Structures are given as C-alpha cells and as structure tokens.
Length: 441
Image (cartoon, rainbow, N blue to C red):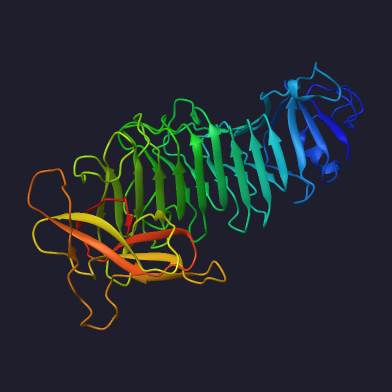
C-alpha cells in the first residue's frame, strides 16, 4: 500500500510521489491510487471547481479503505501524527455540486459546495450502494443559497462523522439523511451565521437511521428552529440524540411524524445541567421527563425525583404508544416473581388494560437465553377482555384530581438476567404519568 501527496500549488510531474510532484486535485489522486493507499493532502491545499459538477470517487474497498489525511506540508516525510491538520479545502463554485463516493476515510478536509443562488448538492455516497465513509475533523459547508447536504444513498450505506461540522448559507437549507449515519463528538457542530430552520430531513420513501452522540447542537436556537423535520413525506425515520447539548429554545421536531415508522429519541440531551432529560416522539404521541408530578421513593437521579409524562394522539390498542424500555435486574430462578410499575392519571376512573398496560420480557428457558413476553393487557383482540387496572400505592406530588394505578405481571424466570418492561398506551388524546422505577418482588 502506497503513500501519495496532494497539493494545489505543486509544479512538478504530478505523479503524487512527493510534495514537489504532488497531485494538484483530490479526484486525480483517487483515480490513480489503489484500495488501501494513503493520500496526504497539504494543510494549505486550496482546490476549486467551476462550470461542472465535481464527483470524487475512492477506489477503496470495505477491507482496504483509502485514507485521505490533511497534514502539515512542512512536517515529517512521511507525515506522522503530530503533522495532522484540518485546513485543506476542496470546493465547487457558482452552483456546481460536490459528491464524495466510495469507501474512504477523510481526516481534516473542508468540503464546500457552491457560491451562487442555485441548488447544488453536497453529497456523501449519494449515488453509491453499500459503501462506508468516515469523516474525522472535517467540515461540510454550503455556499450556494439553495444548496443542501445529502448524507447517504439509502442503499445500505453507512457514514460516520466525528468532530465534523456543518455550515449553511440560508436558513431554508438542511441536511437530508438517506442511510445509517453516526455523528459523534463534535463541539459547535453547526457553524456560521445562517442557522437552518430545520437541520435534518429524511428523503422521500427511503430509509434513514440517524444517531447523534456527544454533539453540541445548541447553535440551532431561536423561534421556529428545530432539529428534525416532520410531517408530509420527509419526516426523519429513526433518530437518536444521546448526551448532546441542545438549545433551551429548540423544539425536537416540527410536528407529528407522518409515518408510523418515524421515531425520535433524545436521551440525556438538553440545555440545562441535568442528566435525566428524556424525550421520545413518534406518530402516536410523546414522552417527556417530568419533575412536578412524581412519586415519593420513585425514580431519581440521586437528587431529583422524576416521572415520565406520556401524551398520546391518535391511537388504538393494536397500535399503541410504546414507552422506552425499563430494565431491572433479576436474581430469582425457578420461582414466581412480580414486576410492578406505578402510574397516575388526571381525573377519576381507573384506566383499563386496553388503555394502558405493561409487557415484560424475561429469560424463560434454562438451557438458552430465550426470552418470553408476558402482559397485563387485554388477553384477546375480541371483546370481553377489557378490565380495570389495579389501584396504585404510595404518594404522588402535584395538585388536582388524579387517579393512581399500578401495572403488574407475574412470571417465573429460568435464568438470572435483565427483565425488560415496556409500558404501552392505547388510549388516544390522553396523558399518563409513569414512575420508571420498576420493582420486582
């Protein structure tokens, strides 16, 4: 596997063998490199393309990734880790699109798309099938006011972005997710003065799975600013925001997701210095952590009691709202145990087992980690299985008339291990508070 050099100011033979003889364009280097080669791109490399779209395609394979690393041109030859930089620039001007293709790992490159008023695309593997791309210490920037960022192809591609920023030139711009995308460990993730009204959409009719971990998204702030588009045919299919910094004035989505498959989960992500933020949203409703209506002795971060407030919209028992899983460790084997979860609702009247119930999965086979699921919901889709849940116990805070209830299932575990519980709600246009501290007895 060979090393090659890229520098826009080189005047030599252009075969990539040294800085003096470096390739002057990234695409030419890719065209001549083999799978698994390393392309060192100079810290002062400045490359522009006008008049036509720019496609840059790597010859790397899934097992022999091509690496493109920005380094100090005045450093060691071959470069060492201390020479790494993040200043090389590859750009299109006017309204030319810029597309990065193939199995490739970029480190420290700024990719800019357009300088005009048209609608070019800055695309990552946007026409490839089954490709893998990683960007470390990079930046994706839109110069044309009608441009967009397209991440993935919807054809089994995966893109990883680490310490990689985005920049926009118009508040109406956004990034489209069309693949499995992992965005991690990025401070000041959205740079520049034009903050999008909607940061992410999913493409029409194509699968998207977006996971964001340890990213500062607080720049997406102000009236009308949201992280995820929704409604119509462009709602984000799956999104998980974990341990991220958000603006206190940013909503998580714009409206109810259009597709039953759409789901957004924000876990320990917010704008305040607490570690219990939770927001879960799908077409059936939303779940938000709550500190006003809580159960004494219930779930806590060690200081603050918390509950889950679930608010539903159009639902039915066959397509309920499903809360995030609640895990509790079980040490009992071969004896009956009971799992219980406490809740409370506004108004009078005990909820029924078609309105709210719990399902629990436990290890039911002594010879394998096979699980079984038990439920206190209605036993049949036929009429006649409807019954009231049990009255709850304990003390809840908050004023107003409310009814306490308890969800519970009994089962016999055959192996030690975690029991996973899901609270499900089939009653539309209603609100329930759940204490997510399950108990086994």
